[in-house]
Length: 520
Image (cartoon, rainbow, N blue to C red; front, side, top):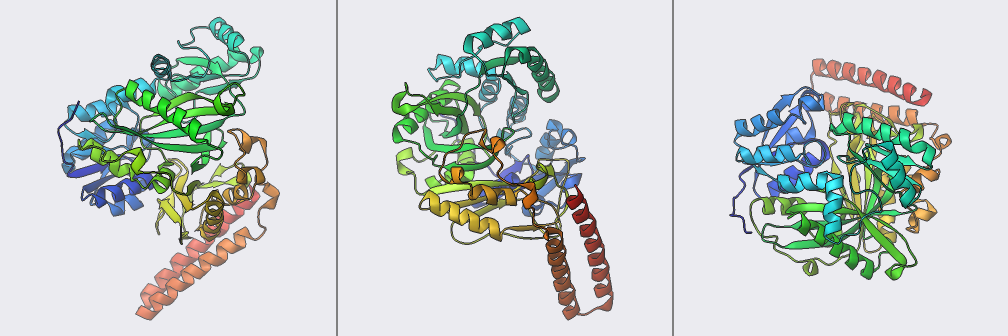
């Protein structure tokens, strides 16, 4: 069915952080005006500064701001926004939000509420995939109703198994079960977590495949029936089911396996009448009985733009955010997969405000100073800006560092250079972990799986540089001293005294922060 064209004039971004910045840039390149929304914690955030307009939508708690459908819709109506881009996370896969946008005559930049609902329910999506001939992981199709049913399913498919929330996402509502005596407790815990996180306690049991890789296929579909697959991303570098590094193409991916997986992803998109960008995630494992010695099964379909979309953009020469906006406006996609062949290699490191030497403990506070990575083959999607801080209310992701190279080896070398150039002062970051991973022999050989990081010591806490606090203080002092000199050149004794007082407070704060970090 062909939708009428509906040009987008003003776009509200119902999100924050680096993805809000990314969407603003994509919209601006298309001549679309932008509206940022912000909580009290994000009043001075980068996306707020960048947008054409900005509207406060509530207090820092996500439930009272970025997750408040009423507040977001009211902001769109107040500013005359005719479209809303949800980014990822928050309301991006909320079918009710997409439906309410439609009821208010606001274009939701994403798939239909029906597609979101169908793919968001893991049990219904498994049923749909199975009917469409897409391979699924062995396990229950229907929700588990009692421990005996869970036990029968587990005995049939064999241990280890994984208990999953039907409405789950983000690694929540999941329990790994190694043996029968652990199953009943795991089902109970998964149900309790699912009710708390998603308001739905339905769970199912499926086979745990390991070792296995996590491979995603990028899908783009317009309202004219065109479905394009843009190859794969390897997201196997994970910790506690959270992605750390993504790359495209996947190491060791044969053209034959890619073709089989793209066919499955196309069938999955067609089965739910999908439009917009989306990602079909798969488990891939060695199987001597499968063609080429590797087999795969679908995990889920993410009905939104993914955080790792930049690696696909760099190797395929596309702009997935702009594709979303054009499709939402009723326009055809305008290219085929053959017109966007794979070129080179791209890799993304998710830089988080966490201390990798302290088991990735969250690190919050003001950013005293930072230096961005740059140079050939380097892209940085970031929320950082001078004068902002890292809030305890939201996800710890502060930026995504992406590199491109003609080969995987060149891509890794550029990533190592970029990580060495990238400096953030004021909070701890995951940069040291990523530097260590780039030097790991198995990673460099493309020989890892989803549990590799957890099973191997990538970064030893004892390797923390002894002078990390001193280096932080020295750099902060240099920054403030430069500011004082610049102010002095402009004259004004009162301004100089004020700046000195501010810098002194800043140094005292950094001393306290540094002491807390080194003492744990």
